[in-house]
Amino acid sequence: MFTRTVGKIRGLQQCATPAGKFAILALDHRNNLRNLLRMQNQNLDTQDMMTAFKHDVVTALADVSSAFLLDPLYGAAQNIVSQTLPGNLGLLVALEETGYLGDPSARQSQMLPDWSVAKVRRMGGSAVKLLVYYHPNSSTHTRIEDLIKQVADDCQKEDIPLFLEVLTYALDPAQKKLEGDERQDVILESAEKLTPLGADVLKAEFPLDISMENDFDRWEAACSELTSKSVIPWILLSASVDFDVFLRQVMAACVAGASGVAVGRAVWKEATALGGQDRVLFLQTVARERMRRIMNLVDALAAPWTSHFEVAQISEEWFRTYPEE
Image (cartoon, rainbow, N blue to C red; front, top):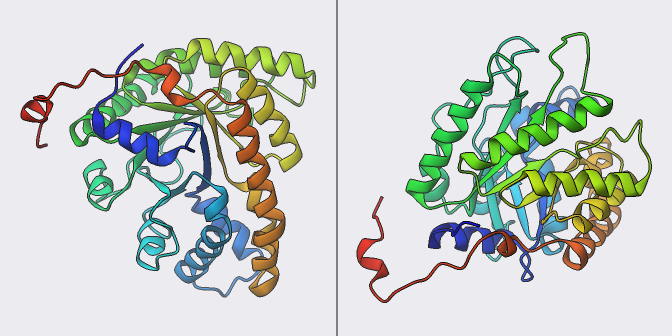
């Protein structure tokens, strides 16, 4: 077990429920969200369309979430300045550019230009989120690992937590996604290799191909393996599955040691097909009830993030050696 510095502890506290579990509403989507919204209205201005949607989601779900994950383009600063995001909620801000560079079988994540860990800290962010595309046998695996180490070093300097999101993929370009046992093996190996590199929380895919395995005990066993492979707390991402499926995944994950969720489209995706008061009504009723159920389940079953770290011993002289930068 490891200790965490005071700034990281404070950031993790801000992102969690009082019980130390994560019920994070993920809303840092860019290309995927843009495409969904444009299906309904091709003529809308991208910035206005994206900002308005994120405003509506934050307004409706703020008091049933422990934190929000937002992007710097359309969500983070806008919801602070408009005072839509309450001051008592955690704020995670994405670092990466959307998508990836390179061949589909050798994906390279990239940082958003002119954006940094230091800027997230300066704007009042509680935590940083970095998404990487990773396969342990890809030709780019070393570069991805180096990127994680560099961002982790930056977060250590700024004393802000790093949430690491890992999206795995197939090495065969003709294969759209990992399937069967290969999916489970790659997700588990990725957690084992990447979580010791300096991140504070792993944001992970469900570690099983649910299209080929529907037994809940197998789901729970796979999640237990992920818990054993990760040296840091892990939370489950929703990957756009339907809500009922995700709720079952959340139960399996949390019983098996996960510390919560970062859920996006499983909660709010139908709202992208709506506008005006219809959208607001959906978010304030259906989406809100979904997030409330997720938060209650997480608080009841998840492992607190504090169970993964030792309590730091603080002396009366601690501030003398606490670095300024």
